[in-house]
Amino acid sequence: MSTVDEILASGRYTDKRGRGWDYVETVASWCSPVIDGEGVSWGYRYLDEAQMRLLIERDKHRDVCRGLPHCGTHPVPAVVSWTTPIGYPQYGAHWRGRHHYTSTLSEAMDAARALAVGE
Image (cartoon, rainbow, N blue to C red; front, side, top):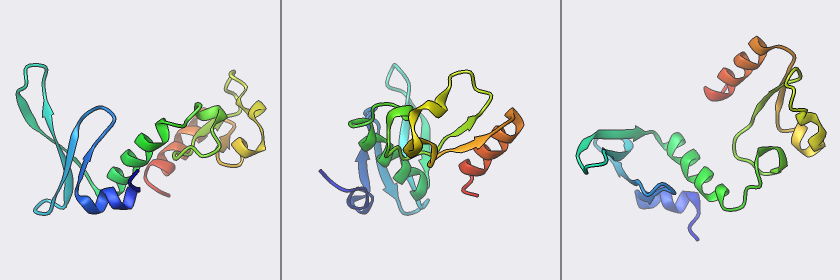
């Protein structure tokens, strides 16, 4: 199995949804054609290297993931509001240590935005 760095260096990747991705130097992005149900191309999806790395990491992780509350190695941090009725805090310290807890919805939205932009 190839590592994420090896895949990025190759410049080609087919994701779990069957979309082919190629690195295009002229636009310095990973590109995948957007094709409708009749096989007509409607342009391209573009991802920068960080977004492509995350897509590959998520694809590789899906083979072993038992779901966010039970996964100790999930590649994406989560924001959990203590007001959430689901009761996520029951899943143990390994899970709590990797997540950002808030007490209000507005704090949760602020934390999610900060995580999304890398703050």
